[in-house]
Amino acid sequence: MRLRRSLLYVPGNMPGMLQNIPVFEADVVMIDLEDAVPLQEKDAARLLARNFLRSYTDRNKEMFVRINGLDTPYALDDLREILPALPDGIRLPKADNPEVVEKLDTLLTEQEEQLGLEIGHFKIIPSIESAQGVLNSVATAVSSPRLVALAFGAEDFTASMEIDRTKTGEELFSARTQIVWAAKAAGLQVIDTIFPDVNDMEALRTETALIKRLGFTGKSLVNPRQIEIIHEVFRPSAKEIEHALEVMDAIKRAREMGTGVISLKGRMVDAPVVTRAARVLKTAIAFGMIDFELTDEVIHGEK
Ligand SMILES: CC(C)(COP(=O)(O)OP(=O)(O)OC[C@H]1O[C@@H](n2cnc3c(N)ncnc32)[C@H](O)[C@@H]1OP(=O)(O)O)[C@@H](O)C(=O)NCCC(=O)NCCSC(=O)C[C@@](O)(CC(=O)O)C(=O)O
Ligand SMILES: [Mg+2]
Picture 1 (cartoon, rainbow, N blue to C red):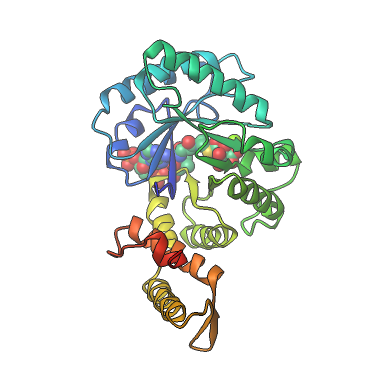
Picture 2: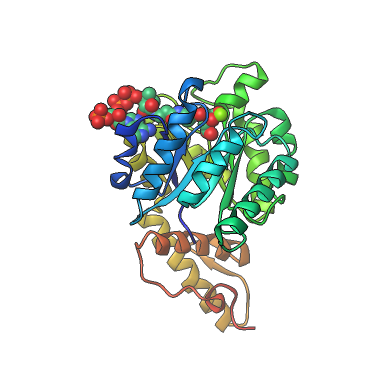
């Protein structure tokens, strides 16, 4: 399981910020060529991003680049400059429909052929940032085998909806759940939007706990000070791990008794409870928190 809990935007036109990328402990860094970069700096940002990626060969995190929208005059130049510097993938803004992802897929294939890379080398994370994008998210989620996740962009979403974005986020609830459902149905990870107040860590923690409960697997960020909070919230607690191990033990005993259901401290344990416990254990294993052999046989029992 590839961890993509924290995805940090770094503006492509800020050399001082780019040079610190190796020390950030985000799972993914997304160099931004889109909204963080003013029009007069698009060319400079592209070159800075390309040079940085070329120099950053000993990478300890995934590197994505957010290009400009495919309907802008900048996107093709972005791809032409950036792809030879081998980012891991492209964050596609304003992914309003599956066709725009298919178009990017074709452009990536052309570049892979020219660069002699395996087809499918470059991954895609589309950002759903409008009502149209939300309504089309089910089709967008299956629009290319390059997709590793769907992402939500609430700043543009609320702008396009002509509503305010609040800290409590009631206005985002339906869009978030729709995007999570689309991603889960397609077997993708799902990344929540940025939290814009970089000084309100408690509200960031509350929002992250909420989106984790909704099913999101990670969150986009605008500031390195936000990374640790995200990792803390996504890290399974000792209590959750202990409970998951107890569930595995209980279901093993149940199966030995020839049944698929058993009581654990008064609560029913059956197949879906085991599936949820397995997810906690998989995450704990990926975080390096436990050493546990989680085989299909442990989860599902002997065939
Ligand atoms: C927010 C703020 C201005 C706060 O500034 P502050 O000055 O208060 O920050 P401080 O913490 O004081 O900085 C302390 C030290 O960290 C350095 N440092 C800060 N941030 C850093 C960083 N990101 N990367 C590397 N270095 C960084 C800084 O240079 C300083 O270094 P030094 O001077 O050496 O000490 C700043 O963070 C920032 O510009 N962020 C990036 C903004 C950005 O990329 N926006 C576009 C993506 S969102 C979007 O487009 C919406 C979306 O599309 C999203 C979706 O898809 O979800 C949608 O629609 O929703
Ligand atoms: Mg946006």
